[in-house]
Image 1 (spheres, rainbow, N blue to C red):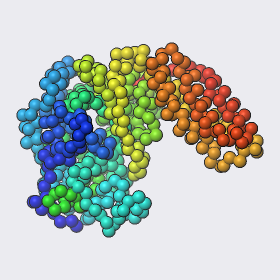
Image 2 (cartoon, helix red, strand yellow):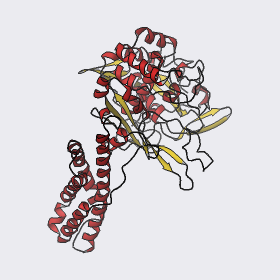
Image 3 (cartoon, one colour):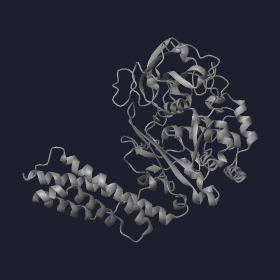
Image 4 (cartoon, rainbow, N blue to C red):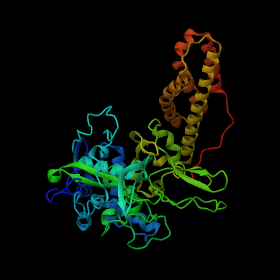
Length: 533
């Protein structure tokens, strides 16, 4: 078992640099305190891992609510908006309020009693550590083969503490489920854990001209009926560590943004605290992540669950009842952000299927100059629901708040129409491409391989979507242009491109593709506009 950290091992999440930021063309690292003191001169966060950036934004926005007073549930909606406008007008965070907050709470990463975002009890509750390779994403651990990494069981290189803190956030918010290092609590030992609250999701964060604007615009408004005074606390604000089975009640904004981790972690420092040499990684709670579905099927309302304000959701109607279940939209690294634009710009609709991130409901109340310039930062992590991490990604949209249905209904509906037509054309392209392959190969003249059935469709879709994006932006500037015909032309071009060699060699392929192209232009029945809920 790793030895206890010495008193010389020290690293403060508040005062030691570990957060990558960008100021114009320059990059530098800051601690949390310095991040807030200089937020008005900082352009943006610059963390190399999008899931770490998305997690840090939630932590920083919870702190923003604390130091500005925007966490007061007694404020009316008009008072809350007025206070946020005042904070924006001041142009920076109050230095006295920043110092008062960070001086009040514990931020030492290697503290023996209250290490930041960690559980010191793991030293005695776990029979052994998990190993630094299990902690660092991408390194092989256990019996896994080292395909793309020089690390192995005998080459467990330490990690700089600044990097380890960013990895710590990834585990807390996007961590895997399944087997983990066994942990013994109250005489019971178990080694399984739930997945993190943001696993396999894509987040949409308002992005201002400075980090100061970004954090204030990202504070979610209080939408509950009541909240007990003093009951809401971030992990570092608690006087004693959280119980092993915390309540599923999620309060605003502290526990909503920072208190839903399903993973318990403890870092083991190297000499002086500049590196992390080992880690414990195990389960934090055996409670379900969200309350169970209501048992009364006649109630046509969704269950009361904690809705993350930066995620989009969709509603699924249960087959055997009229109840609706709310689920998070999953991240997909192959799906361009603009394909979600209709969900972001359409206003809520009680009968709809999709709901935009709740933080969007407060952005229309921002000062006009900020609203017109505000973009959206997209952070996604393409994962399966359990253990496989595929790819993380990020993107920045152009300013789009003036396209929302509240400000420009015609533009919002045009966006919804174009998104719908792009998706339907893609589905039709996949269908006709597969059918064309079957027709071509049934004639016996094509020597296409067994994988060509999917190759024609997959290659055509891969060629179609970049062209569809170009068509999409052109259609927004040409409201009179027929959207179905424009996307059909892009799909036809993609299909002809990927089947050119087959069409030259085999007449059957040429005839099949020609028939498929006609199918792309065939008019469908008009479908109802996509709505959000």
